[in-house]
Image (tube, rainbow, N blue to C red; front, side, top):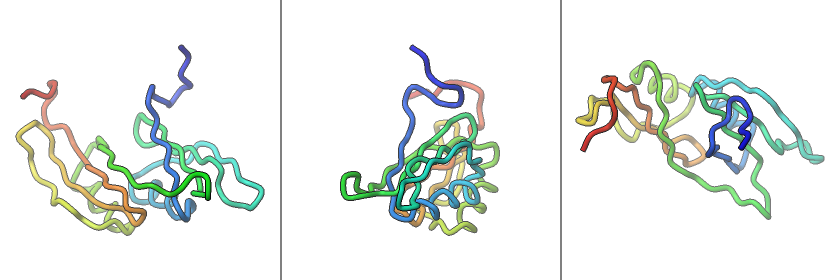
Length: 131
């Protein structure tokens, strides 16, 4: 099986209303980098690939056939506090303050303007999760 560089076996694909604004949030709010873009004939994004750390996500403008839908995503970062501040500055709403968690992450949560939840997590121990 071949998986293109920058992708994982499972890759989130966002269908959102106002894809341009969502891509801007991924870049400004979550420190993403746009990698590739293709447009539909109506000028809306057909597929925008954005790198978030070691992962690539894809974004498309929602349509009649592919309705907008929200999800929940766990995002590892180097600094949870700074990343939460950046996401909020880019328009996200805090849903959980950053705090140390018993499972070894320093974590907070935000909801972006498109309804997605982002669990922004910094691993504080170099070991697997334990029950």
